[in-house]
Image 1 (cartoon, rainbow, N blue to C red):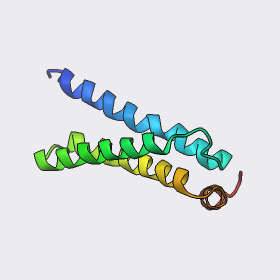
Image 2 (image 1 turned 60 degrees about the horizontal axis):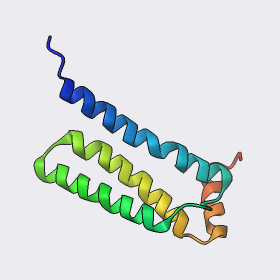
Image 3 (image 1 turned 90 degrees about the vertical axis):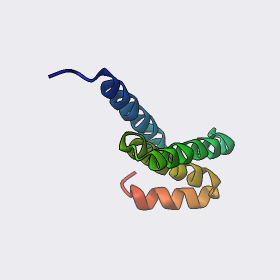
Length: 100
C-alpha cells in the first residue's frame, strides 16, 4: 500500500484548521466575553472560509468542503458572538454551557 503524502498533509491541515477554532469558541462560552477579538478579522476569516467552501463545492472536492464548512461555522459563531451586545453574548453562552 502506497502512502499518499498529499492526502496526509491535507488531512493534517484540515484537522489543524478545525481544531484551531475550538479553543477560541470555548473560551468565549466559558468566559462569556469576546473582549479583545476583532470583528473585522472574523468577518474576513468568515469570508475566506465561505470562499474556500464554495470553491470546494464547485470543484466537487470533499477534502476542501468539509473542513472549510466546519471552520466557517466556528468563524460565524465567533463573529456573531462579537457582534452581539455584551448582555446577549452572556445569554447565549449561558444557554450553551449553563454550568459555568
